[in-house]
Length: 188
Image (cartoon, rainbow, N blue to C red; front, side, top):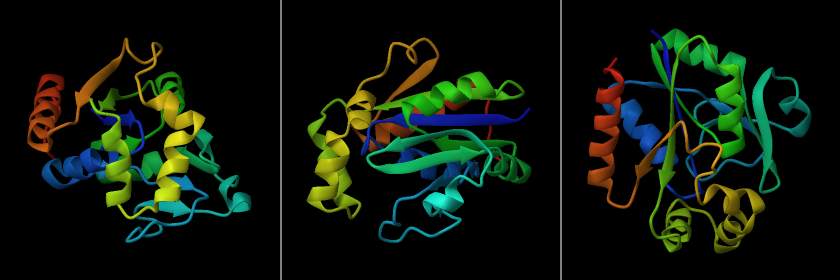
């Protein structure tokens, strides 16, 4: 059975770190999504994102797309199919509205929805700065309406999202491992 793990949470909560852990430890394929923002330090086109112009962005067949902090982000059916051709389990990082789109659109596989929570909101800015963004970019991201919305789990997501506490990385990996075991998801 194919499985998709959908990860959401506030900027800096550790969504991508968890996704990378799942790739490294379990061999899960990452669904590469699309964005109109510029690459961050060390990000590569077609690996981290498909970096698009506004014109090329809309040439894709999207499951969902949103504007977030002034940039477009979206995930395409083609990106999902490509990831699931490589392995039976794939992961994707989305913002909370995207999660709702996936909940409606994806019916033919097991889907695990995870909300990554950081107990101390002040940690979000520290984490964003550590990944190479400027203070101005970090402030802008955390001040956006979308980031404020994603700082706590929506009542619309709560009934079906597993909450992953990400305060201490060692504990977080134990939680992730347990959730996967409980769902019957195994290494590739």
